[in-house]
Image (cartoon, rainbow, N blue to C red; front, side, top):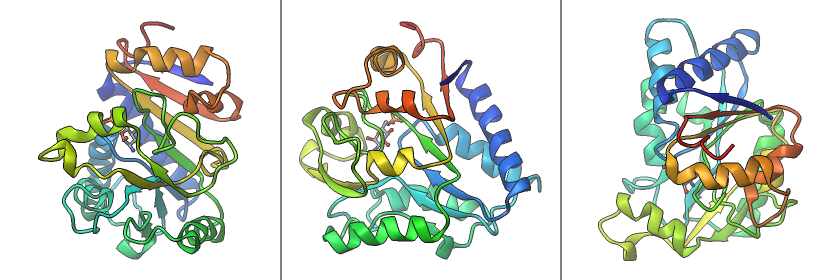
Length: 239
Ligand code: GLP
């Protein structure tokens, strides 16, 4: 694992550079995107680079990690709406090249179809990750099997509480989600994980230095050959 401890702003700039290099070398790169507050600074940098003519997503394809079950894509808190608003509508990626799991169809066929689409696109070149306070990546909660592929997950109470700030009340936070599995994430050729703030410090230390165990989903990343962690000093304080 490559660890880079720097400010949130500098991390976003450095990572945007990686996207620029990747898309120069491979215009039709397959990008795995994430939601949450952590990736926003990077998305702002990508939009800025696009506006300056330094980067183009015209031939890129994207797959998002996860989506709340039961939310229509037009629901303001759906991850599809988040991605459209914070990135897709502000860069030149064709909407039909963007994929977010369908929260309205949680059938087994739909889970397999998402995996099949990723495979058909040639696999993910660069997967972006945040980390939940309990170590989840995507919505793969502690205990998720390491060999999981896209699946329906039951959200833990701590995750629902953490995400309640985006909804008008905790009752409105969906109880389930659709998420790429751990194996789907591990199949990506390269992975970038961002973590910021003291609330992530303990879990970052467990993921980086602890045993590789399903109770800390992000610990599996220790076994991936190309992972870069961008941490701010607060998130890195127990390393
Ligand atoms: C959600 C997302 C995760 C994300 C996590 C952390 O639960 N499903 O993909 O990493 O939140 O969010 P934040 O970046 O806001 O701390």
